[in-house]
Each structure stands twice: as C-alpha cells, then as structure tokens.
Length: 293
Image (cartoon, rainbow, N blue to C red; front, side, top):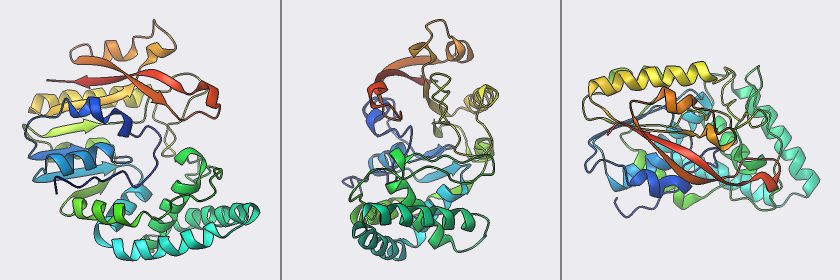
C-alpha cells in the first residue's frame, strides 16, 4: 500500500496537493489514529493513508454530497466507474452546445436528487461529473443549498479515472465516515490522535469569497469556533495542523490569525492561488500552516 500513488478524485477549491511537500514535513513519525474534520478533496488524507497507514481513521465534512461520494467510492466503486465511463463517452461526443445542455440537465437533476435520501450512486456519479466539468472544479451553492456553478471550458475532461478510483477505494477501506459539523469529531479524538484541519479559507479580499460549500456562511465567527475546537483537542493531547489563508497578502496590518493562534506555531508558506475568474490575478500568495508541536 505504501507504493500507491492516489490523487484526489475531485478538483477542489483550496485543495492541498500543491502544499503536500510542506505539510508532509510536519507529519508525526508514527500515526496510529488520524482525523480530518474538513476532508474536502482529500489530498492530505490519501497521502497519509498511503504513507503512514494509520490503524483508525475518521473523515468528516459538512457537505452531504461530498461524503456520499466518498462512501460510494469505498463500497460501490465498480458500479460508480461503470456509470462514469458511460457518461464520459457520451459527453466527449457532444458538440459545444450539446455539452452545455448535457451539463445543465445534469446539474438540475443533481439538485433535485439532493432532497432524496436514497439514489446515492446516482448522486455520486453526478457529483463527480459536475466537478470534472464545471468552472475550476468549484463547489458553490446558493442560499437554497442548490449547486449553481457554470460549465467550464474543457473539450475532453477526464470524468472517469478508473485506475485512480480503484486505488482510492482500496485506501478508503476501513475508514470511518460521517457528515456533520467539525465539532462532531470531538468524541473520536484522543491523546496522540493526529488531526489535520482545512476549514473553508478566510477570503483574501472582499471579492474572493469562495466559502459557500454549504448554505451556511463560514465567517469569522466560524473561524473562532475552529480555534476553540483546536484548544479543546490540544488539551486532550492531539497533534494538530491547521491550514488557512494569510490575511497579510492584502492587508499587512490584518493580524486576525496571528492574534487568534498566538499560542501556536505559525508558518507562512508560498502557494499558487488558482481560483480566480481573472487569470491575471492568479499567482503566488502566502498561506498559513498552524501547528501545536
């Protein structure tokens, strides 16, 4: 299992693939128990599962469609691959106009299925399809909780990466999964549990608010709740790493996180900012890694 090279099966705003070289340096030598309260695209999760092989793992996210997709990859990957392969064949044969119609129909169906408690395989198939074909792999919902991201400009997007999905399924065997608020992970976390937290980032500026993964906004009060949660699990004895944006990219006097986490170690690292509608505004920014050891 150590040789498995598993990529995140989703394109995910704020995904950590490009920061793994920094985060990996902070992994404890041995990880027996691992928890990720904001699993998102799972770059750190799959890295730890392949390199460290923890005995007990809990992943959580507030997004039910995301967690359903993880579960379908864990327990139903063959049928998932079959459905995604068929969709990929059909989509690749479409004209540009037909692709747009195909996408809009899939998005409407997905939003209808979100209110239905079953049909979980179909929801996972559509979730991956929309993720691989929408603008920048962004997951955004409106105040009604409906996915509303427009189509991206991809001619032949990889919708079904069969090999990677199979490997992801192997790594996810035995992983505990739950959908809820990050605070609901508290009962799982014990002394020496390694916890990586990647909450929705605090927006870098007033026009960069890409935190609507759920219809409830993740504002500064939520960031403060994350800090309170970290204090709790730090007291328990957990080893903790937190990622977030660096407000000083746009306002050198913004000490929000420096003040909030003054009792912890704060490291600033360089990252590429890829989620911006204006390509000219994408580039190197500073991000934060906050650690308690």
